Length: 226
Image (cartoon, rainbow, N blue to C red):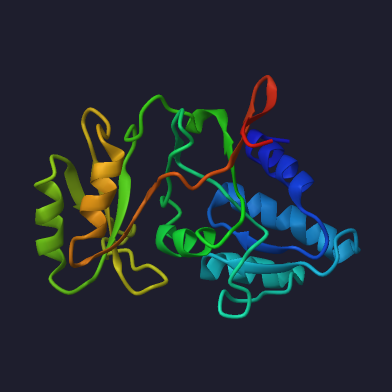
Protein backbone atom coordinates (compact mmCIF):
# COMPACT_ATOMS: atom_id res chain seq x y z
CA UNK A 1 0.00 0.00 0.00
CA UNK A 2 1.44 3.37 -0.98
CA UNK A 3 1.21 6.49 1.19
CA UNK A 4 -1.79 7.92 -0.64
CA UNK A 5 -3.67 4.67 -0.17
CA UNK A 6 -2.71 4.55 3.51
CA UNK A 7 -4.07 8.06 4.11
CA UNK A 8 -7.27 7.28 2.24
CA UNK A 9 -7.84 4.08 4.20
CA UNK A 10 -7.44 5.91 7.50
CA UNK A 11 -10.09 8.43 6.44
CA UNK A 12 -12.62 5.60 6.19
CA UNK A 13 -12.47 5.32 9.99
CA UNK A 14 -14.48 8.54 10.13
CA UNK A 15 -17.24 7.35 7.80
CA UNK A 16 -20.42 5.89 9.28
CA UNK A 17 -23.55 4.49 7.66
CA UNK A 18 -26.17 7.13 6.89
CA UNK A 19 -23.66 9.89 6.17
CA UNK A 20 -23.77 12.44 3.37
CA UNK A 21 -20.22 12.85 2.09
CA UNK A 22 -18.37 15.38 -0.02
CA UNK A 23 -16.19 13.40 -2.44
CA UNK A 24 -13.00 15.15 -3.46
CA UNK A 25 -11.07 15.06 -6.73
CA UNK A 26 -7.54 14.10 -7.66
CA UNK A 27 -5.37 11.03 -7.28
CA UNK A 28 -5.48 10.69 -3.49
CA UNK A 29 -9.22 11.30 -3.27
CA UNK A 30 -9.69 8.67 -5.97
CA UNK A 31 -8.28 6.04 -3.61
CA UNK A 32 -10.81 7.10 -1.00
CA UNK A 33 -13.72 6.86 -3.46
CA UNK A 34 -12.57 3.39 -4.55
CA UNK A 35 -12.30 2.15 -0.96
CA UNK A 36 -15.64 3.71 -0.08
CA UNK A 37 -17.14 2.02 -3.11
CA UNK A 38 -15.93 -1.38 -1.95
CA UNK A 39 -17.54 -0.86 1.47
CA UNK A 40 -20.80 0.36 -0.07
CA UNK A 41 -20.89 -2.51 -2.56
CA UNK A 42 -20.26 -5.09 0.17
CA UNK A 43 -22.95 -3.64 2.43
CA UNK A 44 -20.44 -2.77 5.14
CA UNK A 45 -21.62 0.84 4.79
CA UNK A 46 -25.28 1.58 4.07
CA UNK A 47 -27.39 4.63 3.27
CA UNK A 48 -24.34 6.59 2.09
CA UNK A 49 -24.83 9.51 -0.29
CA UNK A 50 -22.05 11.44 -1.97
CA UNK A 51 -21.72 14.87 -3.53
CA UNK A 52 -18.89 14.80 -6.08
CA UNK A 53 -16.59 17.75 -6.71
CA UNK A 54 -15.92 16.95 -10.36
CA UNK A 55 -17.34 15.03 -13.27
CA UNK A 56 -14.50 12.52 -12.97
CA UNK A 57 -15.33 11.85 -9.33
CA UNK A 58 -19.03 11.53 -10.14
CA UNK A 59 -18.25 8.96 -12.82
CA UNK A 60 -15.99 7.02 -10.47
CA UNK A 61 -18.63 7.00 -7.74
CA UNK A 62 -21.32 5.80 -10.14
CA UNK A 63 -19.09 2.93 -11.27
CA UNK A 64 -19.01 1.75 -7.66
CA UNK A 65 -22.72 2.24 -7.17
CA UNK A 66 -22.30 5.05 -4.62
CA UNK A 67 -25.58 7.00 -4.57
CA UNK A 68 -25.10 10.65 -5.49
CA UNK A 69 -27.01 13.70 -4.35
CA UNK A 70 -26.71 17.49 -4.57
CA UNK A 71 -26.29 20.45 -2.26
CA UNK A 72 -29.77 21.58 -3.28
CA UNK A 73 -31.16 18.37 -1.81
CA UNK A 74 -28.71 18.11 1.10
CA UNK A 75 -27.10 21.45 1.98
CA UNK A 76 -25.29 20.13 5.06
CA UNK A 77 -22.70 17.39 4.68
CA UNK A 78 -21.59 15.19 7.54
CA UNK A 79 -18.09 14.94 6.17
CA UNK A 80 -15.96 15.84 3.16
CA UNK A 81 -12.76 14.02 2.25
CA UNK A 82 -10.26 15.37 -0.25
CA UNK A 83 -6.57 15.65 -1.02
CA UNK A 84 -4.36 18.75 -1.12
CA UNK A 85 -1.27 19.95 -2.93
CA UNK A 86 0.18 21.78 0.08
CA UNK A 87 -0.60 21.88 3.81
CA UNK A 88 1.00 24.48 6.10
CA UNK A 89 1.41 24.35 9.93
CA UNK A 90 -1.93 26.18 10.40
CA UNK A 91 -3.79 23.58 8.30
CA UNK A 92 -4.20 26.04 5.45
CA UNK A 93 -4.09 24.49 2.02
CA UNK A 94 -3.31 24.92 -1.62
CA UNK A 95 -5.56 22.74 -3.74
CA UNK A 96 -6.57 22.61 -7.36
CA UNK A 97 -3.84 20.86 -9.33
CA UNK A 98 -6.53 18.24 -9.95
CA UNK A 99 -8.34 21.04 -11.84
CA UNK A 100 -11.42 21.10 -9.57
CA UNK A 101 -10.70 23.67 -6.84
CA UNK A 102 -13.81 25.78 -7.37
CA UNK A 103 -16.26 22.88 -7.09
CA UNK A 104 -14.23 21.45 -4.20
CA UNK A 105 -14.49 24.71 -2.31
CA UNK A 106 -18.22 25.00 -2.94
CA UNK A 107 -18.95 21.48 -1.74
CA UNK A 108 -16.50 21.44 1.17
CA UNK A 109 -17.73 24.75 2.56
CA UNK A 110 -21.00 22.92 3.33
CA UNK A 111 -19.35 20.14 5.35
CA UNK A 112 -19.46 19.89 9.11
CA UNK A 113 -15.96 18.48 8.92
CA UNK A 114 -13.29 18.54 6.21
CA UNK A 115 -10.69 15.78 6.28
CA UNK A 116 -7.64 16.20 4.07
CA UNK A 117 -5.66 13.12 3.08
CA UNK A 118 -2.06 13.56 1.91
CA UNK A 119 1.31 11.93 1.77
CA UNK A 120 4.12 13.57 3.73
CA UNK A 121 5.54 15.31 0.65
CA UNK A 122 2.60 17.74 0.73
CA UNK A 123 3.54 19.22 4.13
CA UNK A 124 5.18 22.66 3.79
CA UNK A 125 6.41 25.37 6.12
CA UNK A 126 4.86 28.06 3.93
CA UNK A 127 2.25 27.95 1.17
CA UNK A 128 3.47 28.63 -2.34
CA UNK A 129 6.22 26.08 -2.75
CA UNK A 130 4.49 25.07 -5.96
CA UNK A 131 1.98 26.80 -8.23
CA UNK A 132 -1.31 28.26 -7.07
CA UNK A 133 -4.15 27.41 -9.49
CA UNK A 134 -6.51 30.25 -10.32
CA UNK A 135 -9.72 29.78 -12.32
CA UNK A 136 -10.61 32.62 -14.71
CA UNK A 137 -13.38 33.23 -17.22
CA UNK A 138 -12.50 32.81 -20.87
CA UNK A 139 -13.63 36.33 -21.80
CA UNK A 140 -10.56 38.58 -22.13
CA UNK A 141 -8.46 35.95 -20.38
CA UNK A 142 -5.19 37.65 -21.33
CA UNK A 143 -6.27 40.65 -19.24
CA UNK A 144 -6.80 38.48 -16.17
CA UNK A 145 -3.39 36.85 -16.59
CA UNK A 146 -1.71 40.25 -16.95
CA UNK A 147 -3.41 41.39 -13.73
CA UNK A 148 -2.27 38.26 -11.90
CA UNK A 149 1.31 39.00 -12.90
CA UNK A 150 0.97 42.42 -11.26
CA UNK A 151 0.69 40.59 -7.93
CA UNK A 152 4.35 39.65 -8.13
CA UNK A 153 4.01 36.13 -9.44
CA UNK A 154 4.76 34.30 -12.65
CA UNK A 155 1.32 33.55 -14.12
CA UNK A 156 0.78 31.30 -17.12
CA UNK A 157 -2.27 29.85 -18.81
CA UNK A 158 -2.43 26.13 -18.03
CA UNK A 159 -2.35 24.16 -21.27
CA UNK A 160 -3.16 20.62 -22.31
CA UNK A 161 -0.43 18.51 -23.90
CA UNK A 162 -1.69 19.55 -27.34
CA UNK A 163 -1.25 23.23 -26.48
CA UNK A 164 -4.93 24.06 -26.03
CA UNK A 165 -6.12 25.76 -22.82
CA UNK A 166 -7.36 23.49 -20.07
CA UNK A 167 -11.09 24.01 -19.58
CA UNK A 168 -12.62 23.21 -16.20
CA UNK A 169 -15.94 21.46 -15.60
CA UNK A 170 -17.31 24.99 -15.20
CA UNK A 171 -16.21 26.05 -18.68
CA UNK A 172 -13.41 28.32 -17.46
CA UNK A 173 -9.64 28.51 -17.99
CA UNK A 174 -6.99 27.78 -15.38
CA UNK A 175 -3.86 29.79 -14.66
CA UNK A 176 -0.93 28.59 -12.57
CA UNK A 177 0.80 31.23 -10.46
CA UNK A 178 4.29 30.78 -9.04
CA UNK A 179 5.52 32.99 -6.19
CA UNK A 180 9.33 32.99 -6.06
CA UNK A 181 9.53 33.24 -2.27
CA UNK A 182 6.23 31.57 -1.47
CA UNK A 183 3.01 33.33 -0.47
CA UNK A 184 3.77 35.89 2.22
CA UNK A 185 0.22 36.79 3.25
CA UNK A 186 -2.22 34.10 2.14
CA UNK A 187 -5.25 35.81 3.71
CA UNK A 188 -4.60 39.04 1.87
CA UNK A 189 -3.96 37.25 -1.41
CA UNK A 190 -7.15 35.24 -1.03
CA UNK A 191 -9.19 38.39 -0.48
CA UNK A 192 -7.52 40.15 -3.41
CA UNK A 193 -8.25 37.27 -5.77
CA UNK A 194 -11.80 36.82 -4.51
CA UNK A 195 -12.79 40.42 -5.24
CA UNK A 196 -11.32 40.73 -8.74
CA UNK A 197 -13.80 40.57 -11.65
CA UNK A 198 -12.96 37.69 -13.97
CA UNK A 199 -11.36 35.60 -11.23
CA UNK A 200 -13.94 32.96 -10.31
CA UNK A 201 -11.91 30.73 -8.03
CA UNK A 202 -8.49 30.00 -6.57
CA UNK A 203 -6.70 27.21 -4.77
CA UNK A 204 -6.21 28.85 -1.39
CA UNK A 205 -8.30 26.94 1.14
CA UNK A 206 -7.86 28.89 4.36
CA UNK A 207 -9.38 28.00 7.73
CA UNK A 208 -11.37 25.16 6.19
CA UNK A 209 -9.59 21.92 7.08
CA UNK A 210 -10.39 20.28 10.41
CA UNK A 211 -8.26 17.14 10.19
CA UNK A 212 -5.16 16.33 8.16
CA UNK A 213 -4.30 12.66 7.69
CA UNK A 214 -0.64 12.42 6.69
CA UNK A 215 0.88 9.14 5.54
CA UNK A 216 4.65 8.79 5.61
CA UNK A 217 7.43 6.27 5.87
CA UNK A 218 6.86 6.01 9.62
CA UNK A 219 3.12 5.45 9.35
CA UNK A 220 0.01 7.62 9.48
CA UNK A 221 -0.25 10.81 11.57
CA UNK A 222 -3.36 12.82 12.46
CA UNK A 223 -2.97 16.61 12.66
CA UNK A 224 -5.75 18.78 14.01
CA UNK A 225 -9.08 17.40 15.18
CA UNK A 226 -8.77 13.67 15.82
